[in-house]
View 1 (tube, rainbow, N blue to C red):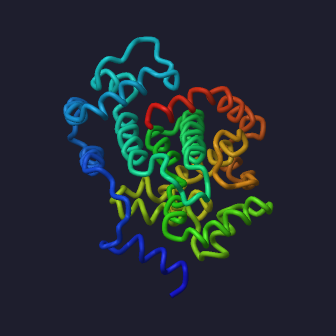
View 2: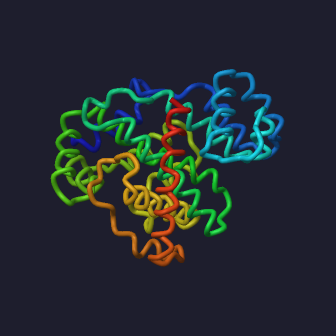
Length: 287
């Protein structure tokens, strides 16, 4: 059995001891899918979990959101931040609670990977806002989870992945290309497979699956994939956290398709750098 098939079997087999998400995530995803769900339904559900309620309110009142008025309830957070934004925060915090800052077999620094992921999520939201694309909050969640495949590689293929990771450090070859060449599958594809195992909807898992190959993403989800790929590039350029890529990928065609000039991309980079302290605070609040 080749390495690619081995890792796919690990993800797909129901008896594999993969990290499982808390039950609340399944329920939140069901709420998100149900068009009949109201803001009050969501508020009532989240407020049953005091720990999640506290974290959402702490985040809503953090410098990351920079709101002028205090957010003192989940209902108010939904009103001010947004229905899907609160859903995204809840899912994101629960994913972090599963993986957190756990040891990645000394292959990479988990905290720095999460900083990179939050930076990517922030950049994705900024790009989507500039393009006036709806569902900005869903793009934030895709950005937050886009590199989750690296954690699976480090857990189940520690020796093989340590070698690939070191090669990426020592060379100017993007990590995902070395993953594909050596392991037969890259982290983006693996992230998508994992999200499918977790029953995430296609509008979240497909942009993650194709975030290193967004031009091949199915048309209906391609804009999301393009945005996440550009956001990944921007976050790598700012050097907020570390993802294992020593060289940012080329995204000229992607930025052109999205309608961004080189100057506009540089402005997004500058805005992201200005938010570094808020991004670092965000990580501490979800820890």
